[in-house]
Image 1: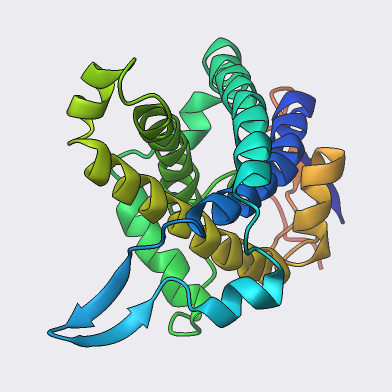
Image 2: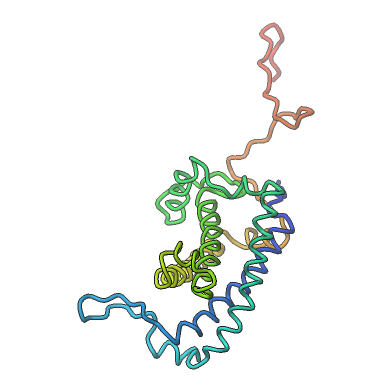
Length: 247
């Protein structure tokens, strides 16, 4: 028999779906800004192995010569990103949802089990829970990355006014590098997250829209003999040897 499992409160769903387009605009506008000065590349001696990003990339996406536009979009949506993040963190503490998101001492072992199962190296599916160990680590890391993006963003936005913050971030160049690395982290997380959503199926995606998920019974499920008042299974009693057995 199918059962309905309530997973995501309305507030969590709103914060999630608001953050998605906001973060997309932040990354897009950040690329318009990055075009004006893109020093990051992987080199060995005089050889450039990887360049973030080649000129053809900017031309293909139409990012060239739009610095002022990028700064305008970036600084406006920065406040939406910050406000949505503060409301999200505040709600998780007030509602107690943080208990489901903060990793514990079992999370890393669970994350390994989930990863092995997703890669097909483990046949047994991990137990169904609201957030498994891999999800806890990923979602908590994203929250920490969000804090890092805001701090490094302010450090490079107002390096004179917030000189103490810029110094705390390791200086202007280091703050800019961390800000860039975090952006790459968001993009990588998006593709991994999208792959996990596709693998989990429609019902898992639906739970982030409706708030609940319909769970189908497993083949190993066994019906209980009866139910007690506290909704716990009651084990069948041993037969009385003095009574005749029923045929």
